[in-house]
Image (spheres, rainbow, N blue to C red):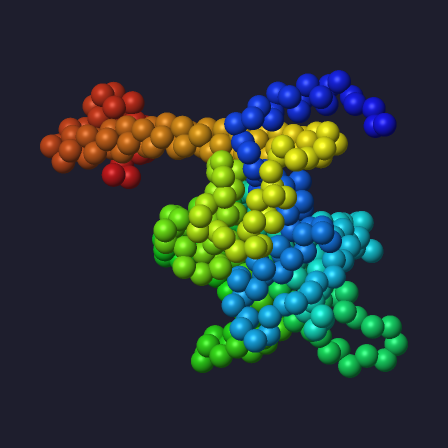
Length: 307
């Protein structure tokens, strides 16, 4: 029998209070439970097929690969993926949940995509033939500076020629999902992709499986996502993962609010300074001396002369 750590048990009881019926897929435990296990690979296959709209070239099976890759010779830098797999035709997929925007996110995404490329290298004589590589990012944030329209949340990116826009290399594909932009309701779910987006976006807030999700794959997903059917070890693992997710998002929210407050304070200060300069300009236009203006505005004589 597995011994139960009482601190862990208290943590589990404190976090899993019964308000949620289904796990949060944005947690490490939740995503890997649903999409990163041999038992549930049919869920991953269904999601990838809906995401890529592959038609006749549908994925029928996947083989999970080591999701932790050690970069030899680069300060032991590790690339850790949520899911890393390959299909029967040799195509390789990295699937990652991104909880929040990070500095150099695009650079990181490109860097991670080099792992499944290098993994295809063969010892000895090799002609450099590569199979398809897909890097899928499920983003719990939106790209900065309104890079895409508000109603555009799926982005498929390939290497293209900037002159005539043709695809220069079609074996490397990046797919990004801006999840906060997805706002379809249950009665608006027309495609399998719509349904998967709805599940990822809403799963932890649902108390039952929506009627629109009648496909067998979703029946299985909701069974696998139900917290009540987990054993004690899984419940502790999920509770720990959920706490880590809450702590992470709370830290980001706090930083964001501090940044907003600082911005408002700096904005007010800048507004006051600009107002004083405007007054000084008017005083100068009225013929007042530099010394008089300096005394009344606390500006330096040099600042006033530059006006």
